[in-house]
Image 1: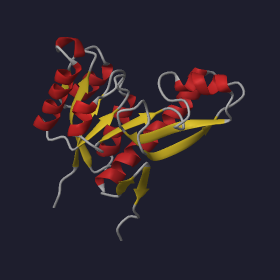
Image 2: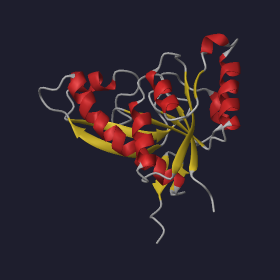
Image 3: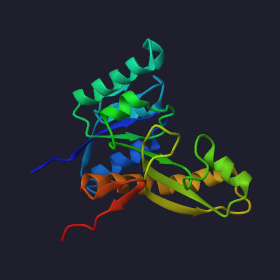
Image 4: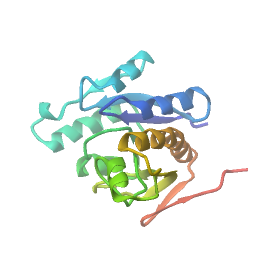
Amino acid sequence: MKGPLVLGVFASGRGSNLEAILEAIEAGKLPARVAVVLSDRPEAPALEKARRRGIPGLAVLPGDFPSRQVYEERLVEICRQHGVELVVLAGFMRLLGPTFLSAYRHRVMNIHPALLPSFPGLHAQEQAVRYGVRFSGCTVHFVDEGMDTGPIILQAVVPVEQDDTPETLAARILVEEHRLYPEAIRLYAEGRLRIEGRRVLIAPPER
């Protein structure tokens, strides 16, 4: 019988989505385990959160490598050494290129704090408030070589209030991120996701 899905988590910051994933695993809601956490910033709090749980937390800095290709080859090498089956981007502030994505094709997920394809890239919550949309939210998607352009897996809607600031909206969206990301990973772990063109089809649970 196949064991839990082996995850590699990439994070550049505080790691709140990493924590949500770990809590879902510990609660028995997600049949997975985090084998390694990687960051492009040695001071990222996500690394310490991993290490406190006995998970290897490694800083791999792009500036230590002669090219993006060599950097990504090292990321692939580390993931393979840890048996990673699915790569989960949790606030990783760096675009992955063809070297990495060809090695983990359709096996890299990301979460974005907007309803894609609206407001890709940085400062999505600020974009939403400035644009005056009535609803925003978050999107879990497979990663391709574009900026937040990969096939969409799940989305959650968050109303934008008239007195919202980017910070208050971000806080409400984050609550949904922490719920949605483990759910998307669970669907992958259960083998229920299939990509057809731009669409991700979700199979019903086995009875």
